Image (cartoon, rainbow, N blue to C red):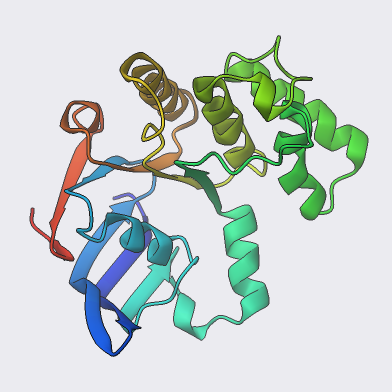
Length: 225
């Protein structure tokens, strides 16, 4: 039996804005095992992104328990949480979040530099990863010189920089046209086949979600099925 990489038990996330209480997550129970390729599906505002942020230690639950590789995140200090985010989880966001002044290779190398790797070693590995994502001819280009699909490929390459256990992708095709979006999902699918990494993708696109091995459907902050 495969080990669990993420586990949520009766997780709630409540926001208070101008005296109004909003429950973004309502008693979520969920497990994701190592090596799974999972799509989290649901309409806008159903809690998909909140769920991913809690799973990825970017946010903490209001109530409930969250485990990453059987470690309960509420019992970890800020340094330990930062280490999990840096070494165990790679993030891909809808808005790419690339640094405009850096080239593609420099953007990919940055997480390795933060982890203590030397400049030349980081640059060498960054270029190797970019080749695997089909960007060998675009390594020295800055984000504004790349298409949206190419920028998202750089973001995926960056998420692989520290060889994490899991990739969490939050609406990775949200800013892309249909063809570029399909190519990004094919890239994630190929990475899963070749590396066996756990991949969790938040999407509202039913057709793209079907490419995953398992779908988790959300509605109103709960797991629907």
